[in-house]
Structures are given as C-alpha cells and as structure tokens.
Length: 242
Image (tube, rainbow, N blue to C red; front, side, top):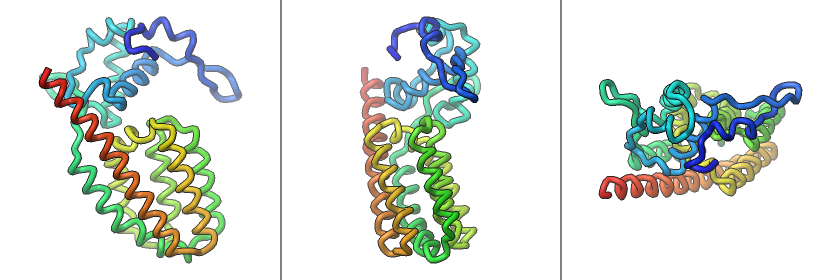
C-alpha cells in the first residue's frame, strides 16, 4: 500500500477469504492497523515517533475513530506506548534486551529439546508439523504466537515445567521483535526449513543433532533481529538529528 494514498480509496480492493470461502472486506480499522503496523515494522515510522491522530486520519483518508482504535490495538500488541497526558508513541527498542533474551534462550532451549527427544510421541511431532504448516501462511501478528506453540510442542515432553515457563515468558517478551523479522519472506522460509529439520531429527531420535540445529536456529534469529533493531535505532537517531 502506498504510504501517501488514502485508505478509503483502497477498501473495495482489499477482500479476504472468510469462512466457507466467502470474501470478507477489511474494515477501516483493520486497514489502518495494517498500514500503521507495516510502517512501524519497516521503520518508516521510527521508534519514539509521536502518532498524531488528526494528522494520520487526514493522511489516510479516514476519520479519527478508526485511527484511535488502531492505535489501541497496536498498543496491545506492544508496538505503541500510550503515555498519559502526552499521547501515543512508537515503542522504543532495546538492543540489550534482545541480546539478553536470546542469550537465555540459547542456554535453556537446546537443553529442553535434548531431554524431550527421547520422550516424544508421534502425535507430538505430528502436531508440531501442523503448526509449521500454519506458520507458512500466518500474518506477522499471528506468527510469534504460533512460533511459541511450535517450540512448546517440541519441549513439553522434557517435563521441566519451571524451565518451560521461563522460556514461554521470553518468547512472549520477544514477540514484538519476531514481527520485525518475519515480514521478510526469505527469513520466513529459513524458519520453515529449520523448524522442519528439527521435527525430522526428533522423529529419528537424534537428540544431539537436534540440539545443535536448535542452537544454530536461535543464534541466527538473534543476529537477524539484532541487525533489524540496529537499523531501526539508526533511523530513529537520524530523524532526531534532522
């Protein structure tokens, strides 16, 4: 969608497949949510930027009501901060936070997977494969949740509930950063291939190989997300200078 074209002009051309194969057209709120999310995740609206409802409504060719509701939804997703008496701002990013999340994941998740492999049932891995298939067509806002469901499916058999709860908290805190990563199609394909490889190794009972693949998977995801965060932070700093 063009950054400068009014959304009202695009409503008729944005049908989606609904249940029973019927086409369901997106509402103005959904269109504004999509547009603002795209701009935030691409860095077109850098971290820390103020979001002025009246200006966005005018630019996008809608009333302030869908803009207000879109900002509320994106705030719930963690992409926007609502600051009392000041307004809405694109959430700031933290390189140190991302690095710490992935450092902890690298220590916990390979260990959990290694313990789980010998305990997996065929239906556990069949369920994991179904989640991978869902992820292939998932929207960015759904991908992080499915990614956690997949990893949980692979780790649950380890029977380490405290460690699993820690990993779940890390995934939930990282979901925002996954969205920056997964809008990139080659990265999405890479994630598919690596997840499929993990499932295949688990089916074969090859715990050490699965552990090594998972370490590489988490390490590469960290590098990709850190590179995106660095780019967005640089763009934000440049905007402040101008």
